[in-house]
Image (cartoon, rainbow, N blue to C red; front, side):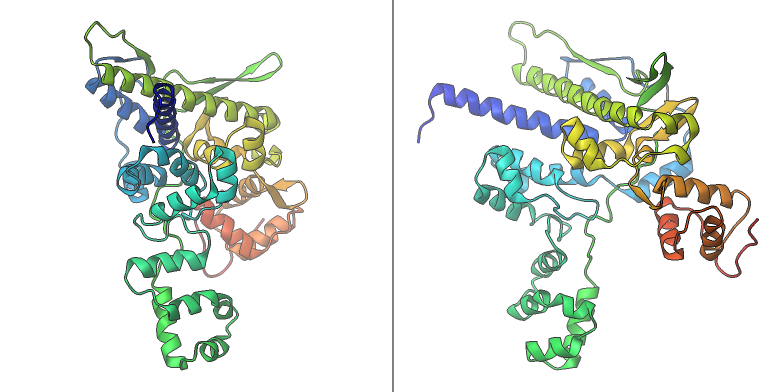
Length: 408
């Protein structure tokens, strides 16, 4: 079918919008320092992209921070966007691919419903499923799975090991979790030795295929946002030193139109990135004004989903903003993620509030999880040792093995 001229214009506009959205999401996935360097490289290669202001001269290199960044590796969304042209050569599929990528969690699983994505973008569900199948061919195998069984199946397929017998094993994975291997072997018609060998193979697969990508919300050296006390509360603004301003130079007659369009995409995408970050940060600061005054103990419950709903953004987009963004308030640089808290395990306490108490105790000296549990219980925060260990691991607080430290 031949497209009419107005249809071709509409299609080109749709494709350009999708490209701008992809770039804006990629910008959100980067720490401010990395983005500033990338913008400088783009400006050096494009005469129509003009930058002004931005970060001051680089401070002395912190080798510990460099090592930590190297260990974290690249971002998940950057990885997916890099492979899009190979997986989906038709650019008309890229808006669906972007929506699916936004639905990934930190483990690489698709947590958004393809039917909901189809409804949101007004596209057939079959198209979303087709694009999803293409994305599931990406390395490392297992990304974009919708369940553990599908994640393992994708890895077995990638290694050329998948068979109908494996399909039957994956369908009955709950039996393995329940320790009912004998029943599973009976259903499969194989002996216990063969089942044990298959389960050993399964344990060699990666149930979290995105674990090698960067997800930590380590605050950047230069804060992205500035919070200041105003007459009616906290005021918030983008930090002009965190990123340069991007603008367009006019195109002369006979100039490179393609380079001019590319520069416009960068300027528009950066504006989308900045507006999204400022919108989410304003909601957080308004909600957590007391915590900015008094510290983590005054944090109120606030979820990413609630932020996404109020900001009109996808929940995973909010997650990307929280991953790297930080603000300066009263001389302290705070990761935005530290101001977002679900209900805590004890009445009136959120997870960051509990972490603040744990840090307070550890400042007095090392303590085991059991000693911390006793210390917290004496202060009205009844928390299990297992949950304390989980919080410690997530916050990378040092663990103490052996005899408990005396608690005061």
